[in-house]
Image 1 (cartoon, rainbow, N blue to C red):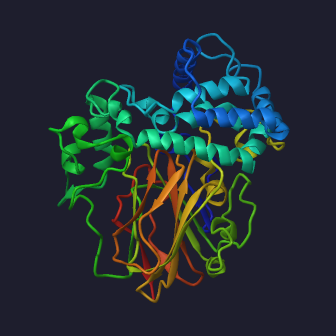
Image 2 (tube, rainbow, N blue to C red; image 1 turned 120 degrees about the vertical axis):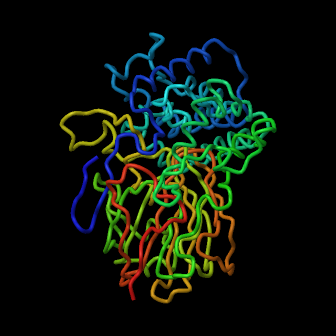
Length: 450
């Protein structure tokens, strides 16, 4: 991804943001090959929602054309043309639906190889990695009928991930989340920024998170219960709780982008992805107040804490979830970009396109009237990426929240978030977008000046 170094537009550059996709794409191919092998060797009946998906494909000419075309447009050359079993990659919708059917009753698992972390959070995204990057894939995942049925598919998977059956991955086996690699890697990510005096304090998983090591699955009822785990009291203290000029980080996250003087409408689908305020805020009646203001965006890693906390004290003015796309990525990520001399699909999938997703993906909008009049109205956007079909808001209009209070959470996978400040609000001190690790949730993020 191109890195912009102007004072208006700073973007983080990484190929595998948040470790949702593997650093080594051969790992992705090995994983997909194993899934395909299992599916081809079985005759598992289709889940009702997959049957509905198939019925729609076979009775809607537009949907049939889009899905078939996106598989046909995947280049017939290395590295696209063969899976590790020697068979052709998935090239038709029926095979795709059978693999998707398999994933609906599979919970994300851990692996001893750290580079496989990119696959545990978004397996459906990994399945669609190549077809998403085609011109027909671009059209497919902007189609409202396809997104409606994908929402049903992801809801069905979410129901499984909330069920006790999904807890099978919460054990101490090599592929379990409480195995040697699982506990070590999750604790390592959570220990960033945890300090005692001048010394880095290394805490164990049990010391970091609310759990019961003596209970089955450490006391977690399901995969989703584990994914939305809470920090123990005191692990993430609120920075300067009595100073309303200090804004705290809303999510445990790595800085991605900072833009000032953002425009009302912009071409967010272009490679530099300028923010388009009216589209981000779903053309809400309050959106115009943020034109010319500041947007800060950060992303959550596969192993991070996924609950949201209010960055300021104030009253909740309005909250709602905007339905959007689930697997849409802009043309510059794939073979459909006419400006590219060399046509290839970016193996990082949606990760570098997080600015684009702020205007297209399913997202939660929370407007907050800060107690500090210098800040006034501000907005939080929780953006669901790929498998995140649920952005769960836990506050209501009229609630008063204290800085650092919980306001919601992500479920099921990759995610990113934005804070929006109005024009004229002088907010400075944001962390550098060159930072390669998380800024702890509820720690100081920025300072507003009268």
